[in-house]
Length: 116
Length: 112
Image (cartoon, rainbow over all chains, first blue to last red; front, side):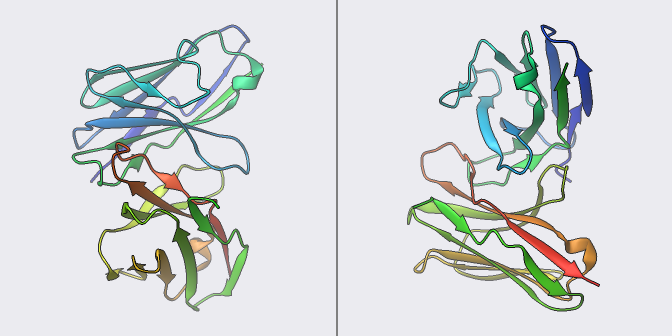
């Protein structure tokens, strides 16, 4: 149980392109989803928290106009990196949580984004 | 002082031994405690969750929580080379919407 699917796994695109990443909870309803970014050899960095039907809450320093998050249903959240540049290249990982805030987060497989 | 601290390692143990991973946290109000395993280039995978003092066992894994000492540990019995990964300790704090506060991770290497 508690399977989170993230798509696509890899994206390579040109600078200036917008990229959409999907995160789906396959066997549970995710009241809350989270988006992280991880650079090589570094810790996970939380970018934003999203609750179904509400605007996402972004962490300090994360540009909300750059990283658009939509959580339209209890099983789907999307992250769109707008006008991506090489410095946006990273490993993006979503997680989903069912129920109360003390429940564990379950992570998707991540999306490796490379901007040329 | 970091909110969640782990020894970064690497921790090296021989195959079949017990690996002991430790984590301390600074906020006494922390309410949930998790261990995640992250293989190189992959996303984290939940290993254990623990909420109350004492031990919790799941197969070869045992999590131990001591809230008075603000300490949580993970024991891996009969360690296998496939256990070689980075182990992340994570806690949640009250009134923070369940955000995970991660330690820096401990790299475990199990030698055949």
